[in-house]
Image (cartoon, rainbow, N blue to C red; front, top):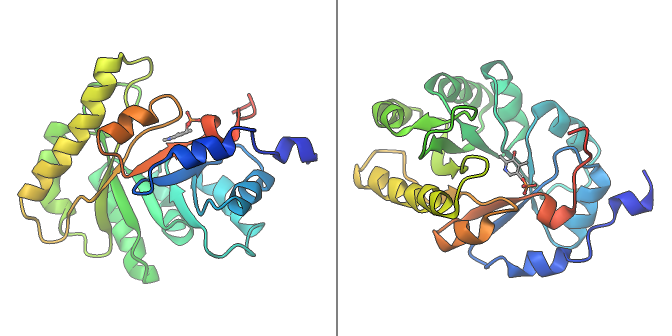
Length: 228
Ligand SMILES: *Cc1c(COP(=O)(O)O)cnc(C)c1O
């Protein structure tokens, strides 16, 4: 790896500092080398997001000297990788089915871990994307509330590709309203205090609607390799 490929973009600090203190910045490093993670870490970033379990495990093995990183899984997770995800991530943002949640809960129990979780929700129809729509979510909440080894405390919302500004706002502000409505139901465990929303193209809107975690890749770290 050459020095140039691991350098952070010039505007890194400007973007980093523009994120309000109440919002957790997750640097999304999928397809980027561990040198980029180290460089961002040196500037103060402690939250990193990866979309694939195997890729993250390989990087973590090279970063064992940085023990205070919080790892976030932000990509779709297959149930057969639930165990590895629980083992290697502190946060799982992409809980998109009851079956996956149950597998995660079981793995967490066996490993004595308590992963922090977000439910990935679809506020507007978006066929190519995974996520729970509102009707599904309503049905599943009581069962999700039973999962004693998961800390389900967030919603992840992603607007459809190419959505209008109005739709982007509907999705982000809708997620906030959804969190409030879930909390009003007074579940035993499930309480939403995190909104994972906002990527490079729309994080300002997400923050305006109440995002508590933004997931920034290209705007912060530069373009990913095009093979991605
Ligand atoms: C890749 C990815 C991001 C970061 O995307 P950018 O547009 O590069 O900021 C955020 N969230 C998820 C779920 C992703 O897959």
